[in-house]
Image 1 (cartoon, rainbow, N blue to C red):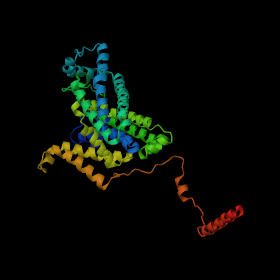
Image 2 (image 1 turned 90 degrees about the horizontal axis):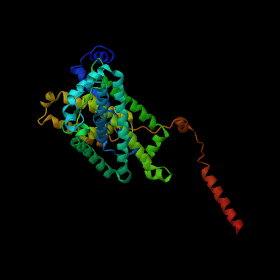
Image 3 (image 1 turned 180 degrees about the vertical axis):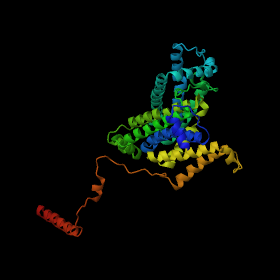
Image 4 (image 1 turned 30 degrees about the horizontal axis):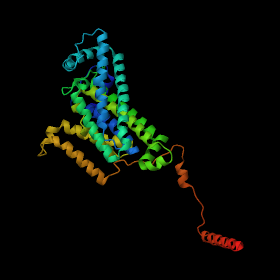
Length: 397
């Protein structure tokens, strides 16, 4: 019955509210779509190219801030030019304290202008991709010169630095108070959470096919060769620095999409919602649990972790009765415990990485091909060869 209600909310033109268990399913689907995008981009970088990106939170923050700092201003400018009486938002004080009123007016405008709302949404994705790629380029600068251990430290520091900037620069995301985000899907007559989750899952599916296509291409084989031995790759004339930079730029742009969908789902933007534990460490656990170098494993790891975390959040009061410590510590215990358990007992993940498949090569024929070698004749051939060599030596003398 619950699946029928969700399907009805997607397909029906009548408004309906998703509540109870149905809301939990929509919530799990939404956050699964968000984090599977981040985890697949991380798998693209680390699982296939060997780049330990510990700054996933930076790219997600960039996607979220691109909406609050740029797209919302574009919306306000266009809607104001259409004659909607918005309150003043041109200084930092009004930018924050008129946010709720202006957001309500923007939502009313979006309900009546679906085409323009879709345009705003596509603009958000485009800006996030570009800014994410720029951040990826900036991340690549230390990645070129630093070893893996120092690179991880730098990227973790950059994640904290981005939060500090968002907290102190009010014009980005409202400072410590945050900023209300217009409901870009207000034109949808059903439950907005459902359509947002469906679009997020669709973006995750598109990302999956893009990553899979790239990994099965010659460039994907180039990435894996860099992961295995970049010195050998450089010795045959390949630009290892350029490959690493391109990978970081592309994956960072895709990761920024998760930040865009997150702020549209929550309807609110604030730097405190982008802690590195949630947007970096949990995706790493999903990747390691599912299996590095395998997108199917990444999907499985993300599904298991997201379902586990959302159930703990929703049923926290019922679960609290079974523990003597605050339930808020349970997630951290699961994060650390699962990570240690998997690395000891299942280091290759639930779905290990498959052998590289090169399209057009008949591996079955190569394996089954018979090579006829008469091992009994080998000693005789060796003796005959030695005799010929000895006779040639005597002739020269």
